[in-house]
Image 1 (cartoon, rainbow, N blue to C red):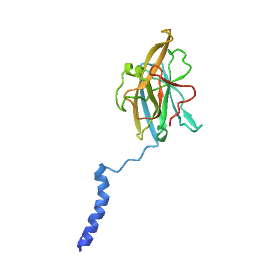
Image 2: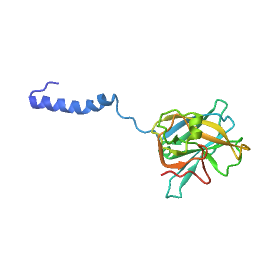
Image 3: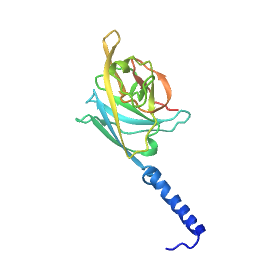
Image 4: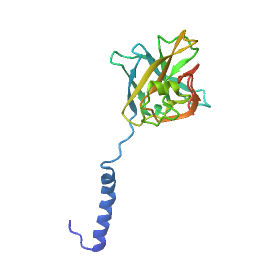
Length: 193
């Protein structure tokens, strides 16, 4: 194609720049958010646990809870969740060796003082006094989370409790709540805000 005027050449250059710039700035056009996310969750310290997902927000009586899935022999559980539903997920664990605590055990998504992405030991998890239990979610097609479970003694050493936490810590939503031996629990569902 032959351009006969400077104005025509300038116009063509402007059009090409508008088309090419978004491609070169990010390397490729922005990918769309997937409709479903595959959650691959590794659980260390409780091969006999059952994990389920829950989602509820304060100020509403609408909630969602998945069916429980037993942790596999490889320590993993896989869920398929609508991607938009990952924001505000909490994670409930049924721990068969835990004595009665009058609460459903929630996984701590991040302890206060723990940065998102920071690893956290069992000692740090048990010593934490405040934590978050709501995940900020993802827009990825596959997300891999890593949870740990450890025991603690209560009732003058006669009973065994469980603490469950994400390590590395996850980006979390409020509320920040007080823990018991580093552990979070609920009696109905864990409400996010």
